[in-house]
Image: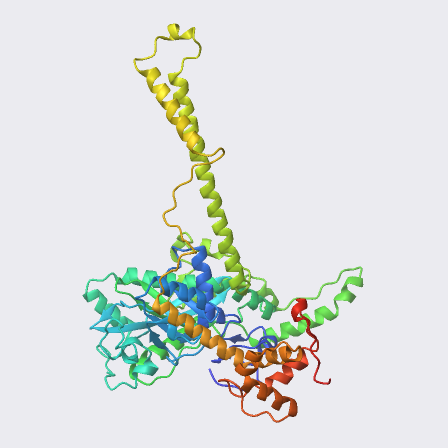
Length: 601
């Protein structure tokens, strides 16, 4: 294997960046690239959250391996609602894109969040599984060799990254300690407590962790079975988009796959050894800062190249076949005109392409896995437990908006209300029918049949009369047509004052202050003042209250605008642009009807 320039006929293109459409279009049939188009659906933190949240709604018992996540600012309202009902939670904030722990911090109050910043907010797993009192996560390397059909391999070894400060549950004093709560190597390598040791260091092998778990009598096989399921389910969540993009970008790759992907899954274990996926890296780091990095990553790359079988097909034969296909397409019209129906001889590579090359590739992968293990398709002819997840809704993820969620919630509430009313009606009917049957049982069918059927038991007529009288009194007490309704537990009287909660009042005051600053900074106050002034609707109190604003409007009219009015940075120059946009504005109310003159007037 050697490096060549892009002008030469290369076999493999390795890049840390996402592939572009131009790169896909220029690729030959024998060439491969180390990224799938569309893998950002799980490698971007915001898209990963949207995909897994969507699958969680479809399969709530199977996709609960991801911390509860909101994409801000779109889901800020849902986050505030969640935080009001669960006040003792800690949240971890991450940029929607980025790596190496940059921009990540913890908070215990969602009020500290900036409302217009693009972030990912997750419920912090406050009780992780600890080794020697330290928090850790695992970098699990996963190789995807094909997306249609899906083939997934997990590397048996990897890296375990430890925090460098002993772990304590988050509180108001330790949330800023990144060496305690973050396990990223890029963060903890700057700590003076970072230890370089294969058995007890801050970075260890997964095989070392497995030996430690076995020594503590933990079920290591069950843990990794759950991790394998987690990885496959995460890939299935984005599979419709990946397949669509792949077939659109590589229609000519008919005898081998054009892409593969070596992903890095960051997995965290909680105190019950339940695995959680934190994020997926599409270009995991292959830097070898230490000996443990060289041992793991060099072997990983060698096994990856071995399973890909880059020398399976001859470049020269494939290029000759491509030229032959072009010639066949050019001569296709001539061949149709020939009544004899002559055929062009096929080359050796063309025969190879028609002899099911996928089976040969799959057999090669199964026989040359190295230290990989295949997790999908399932091994040994077992039933496919992931089949139900492939039948997911394949519509665009961005078709779900806040408005669609609100409509869905309103429809659900309406359905629930309708079901409650139906149950009440059925209960009322069953009660009426039971009373009628009891009445018919106590009353004889006819006067003559009383003796034949036998006399009523003693006191039956008295009970019947009492029942009739009590029923008549109840009916008289209720107005006609009134139905029995369950008593309300709590009725809010809007005419009575409610108790003011200081925390809610402070939030409301802060929101009003922010809105006031926004209105002033955008020049809306100046615009309204100008319109009222031209309509001669300002009273003496308005002129006195907005004297400074009056002077500013005069300065704008004369072209000598001074510093901005209010708290914003020079909002006054926005006024002429607003007046230019609104050439004529009419008000329907005749008491305040006016027409704005344009700046040209």
